[in-house]
Image: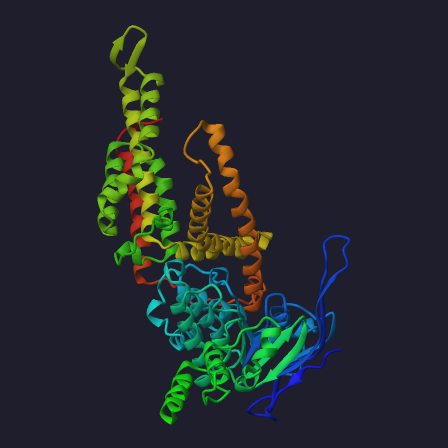
Length: 298
Length: 272
């Protein structure tokens, strides 16, 4: 079996407490007819540490969404184990504890909102957990403020834009005070502006609220913001490391039909043309600075 | 655009009637509707009509909105009244032409029935105009709570209602998208007879159904992620609370009902 390539340190905070531990997980979807079941995950092992921002990358059908759904017991492994704060996800008695520790935001904001008024939707999670009504107001208001949707608390969800709806969905998870939130391609259905709004909200979660974030995406520019990038290919771990290190392996990523951030791509091209530009450029700003420097030297 | 329709008929406002607790509103409106049927003579009819007019003013909903609500039943009111006039027999003949005989009693009775119908429609539209669908659902859930004892799934019904209200605009929008997509491929939705048009709807309904099931599945997963396990142990963000105005309204309606029963005894009954 091909061994995953671990590049550099696997995380900026090696030694930090492990929050989600995926241990040698296999998973197959049961088939409806006579065809043999389709195995999607072939033995994946990875750790998510407390307070970390991890991006999970992979092309369509790589199993990245499947692995995410294992992180709060929506799916249970066919082989191997998943632990959330030491709790085994196959233990049904722990289900509520697991799901209030690890929240999840999905791709389509429309299909996550339950209520006809924004604040009532945000309250849905805490209501299910039996939070006393007196404390609920504070939870809901704080959650809405954290994603910048407080002014819209009395609006109807269907009148909001995609980015706003997705932020309400995020608030609905924050209101449950989870320690970790898994985002399953939260920006895939949004326009560039909505994407920016959601990414800003996610940055806010990581930096201000100290929530562990696992972001599944196929936008490389979003992954570049993470502390650590994990690349899944065909149900196996392909690469893992800091974004700068992972994205410097452009040829290998291409081989597996993955992109690199545009800035990285441009930097790589300029370097191949003989310009003196470093190989760990990730953001447009870094790229612009590197080009200016190179131009100055000439 | 079809997605422009307002959800229910709620018209936000800050009037006395808007502010009443939705549970009290449902109870009182039901009581009033029952008493509309008990109105038997002119004094009690006058009292009831006076109350309805007062409530209409208090609700601060434009009068034309009530007329809009009445438009739908205009024909029904007219038709029942006409039938009553022609069929009810009495002693005092007002008008006779060949086979047609109209009695005074018939005129009174059909008049009463028409006015009753109009009042009922006004009162029930007042409930939907002044109460948000969310409040209405919450109130129904609370009022029906005793039925849980006989195993009626009250919470589940209220949840279904909430989700239905939430998804009506979303599905309307989707229907419109699918219709446009099919039109772009040459589907003809507007011409032909009833059967041809019904057939033309099939390519719209099938994708709509498939996507609704997909939505339902995703929503169920999302609700699982938010620890939804049914109505047990759930708390609420907005707790319904009776206030002074609710008791005031209750006393007022109780007085009205007692008054109507009393007025009914003062003059001879005009309806059977």
